Length: 183
Image (cartoon, rainbow, N blue to C red; front, side, top):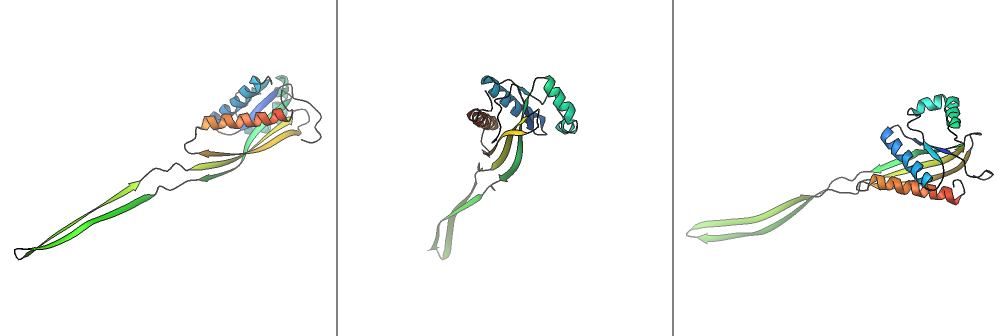
């Protein structure tokens, strides 16, 4: 953010602000691995602070524990908006009439009618979610936000969610590097 004079933090704690522990841990681990790969000392917080509400409630104790671990900045990613589109499966009818034949035969009328019809319903894979995520880096000493970005991610029903998470983390970390916020 404008006015920030410090360089990259010495050690970053990562928080994925998510109640579902499996998703939280997976996202935090992706950030930790990507940042560590680039040489930035980083830790996840899910194991140390499994209950985010409790960690917020005891903010001073949480900050003290993070400082004891050598952390001087905290990276928080949170969902700030989400919309979903679900397509209805559509059924298609196609009918085709072959013909009607009426012939007089031996004083009786012989009638034959032929027709067929088909119904088809194919699964649709255009269900999608749009997620707006805020990722911010805070200086642990001052509590001030020193960097942030908003990302919009579209996830199709057929997408590999882990691949999407990897791409999201890579984009955020690249933006942090570009702005000189991490090593």
